[in-house]
Image 1 (cartoon, helix red, strand yellow):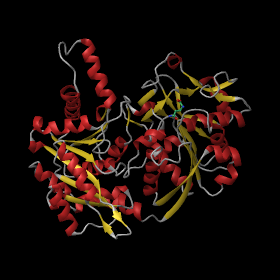
Image 2 (cartoon, rainbow, N blue to C red):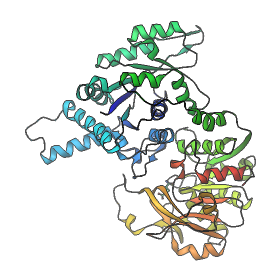
Image 3 (tube, protein in one colour):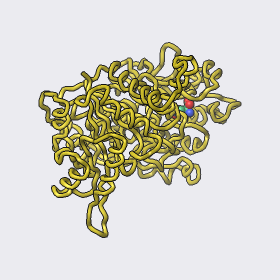
Image 4 (cartoon, protein in one colour):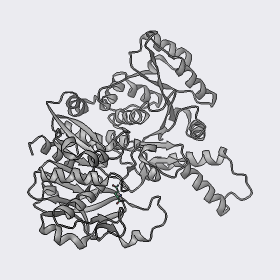
Length: 533
Ligand code: GLN
């Protein structure tokens, strides 16, 4: 019988529900259970693919090509399960499905309502995930904060779930904030009491509370929370701020959260201590011997979540190379204004991430030229690869007007352009080249030395491609094409010869990096930036 854990959030948003859910997954997985994690997003978009990163942070792409919430990235970084399109459900998807069924006449004669039709659809999706993943434990993180109008149907579905699956198979965890009021010198439990009160009004009594706090919770405070919220004292878990998110599973483990969950479900599992994780990830992340500064040249730098997986991948590469990676976030428009020399003189590597639209492109191209000319390690991702091609065509091959047709549709030298099949596309949602595609890695290249294999699977999210018409010319001038999607002869990896580390890829390696297994392209990049490749 599958066990279900619903994770809700109270008081404020941004408490780290995604990382908490991922960490719960981690401690249960370490006990030998097969775990998967689902994210329910209350917005009406079918997926976040059509949203600006400032609205929603990064769009995380799964192996099967779903554009999903960035929390799925946390899940994949903490647990071994691979996320799929079944792991992210939005209000938009739920209504879409119910309305299409209504139009087909499947509910003929009935009035379609939030309860039971919308809630049934939500529950069906949770059960479907349990079935396709064959997980023993399905963790369901409900987006938003308790009290929001939008998330009510998801909470109602979560409440009903214990009727369907049986109380002993369902567990409710509420993540909440215990604020510290500086001038009073006190931590306050009232917002948590209210938040749990709101949950109970809709019929959910949390079994476990995870309390985000700056200060440790005294026994007395825990007792108070326990009494007012009707949660056993040992199930009031303290989640004090940590230095690295990868510590959180250890924080939970130390408070025997895994045992509390297992005993609720009457499960007896093998013992585990997370020692490997502690040694390979946490200790290394906390005590690096080296330091290296990397410039990230991107448009969305003011929001921490926009490049989440890239920041995490750099951290992983740092862990693997025993180095703290300091990220200098640079707006490409500032490079356009004051030139790359001033902004890039104090870093050891340049990374240009993915993106859309012309704004900032010329600044990115200037940054790439600077890295290429100065033999500074460079990693380009997706749009970063397209900009590298434009830069090389313009400055090494003399095609001064080289561009992507995304930015200049009638450009004289369309070194990046649309494939025929993309030209017919009208709808923008879910129509890019998405998900994992195999890439053949050429022998005796930097890419093959990094990957140590000749065939890799990497995830995509883009419309435009390298234009093969320019391959020979660019090759003659010193660019090599070290990765190809053989089925369609599409360029996936480019390198520049006579450079210590200049590599750019059409895909997104950041979606496949793990804290205990950095992605080779990131790891090599940091190694090169440290001067030890
Ligand atoms: N805008 C480019 C394209 O659509 C790159 C996309 C990206 O970087 N994810 O091809």
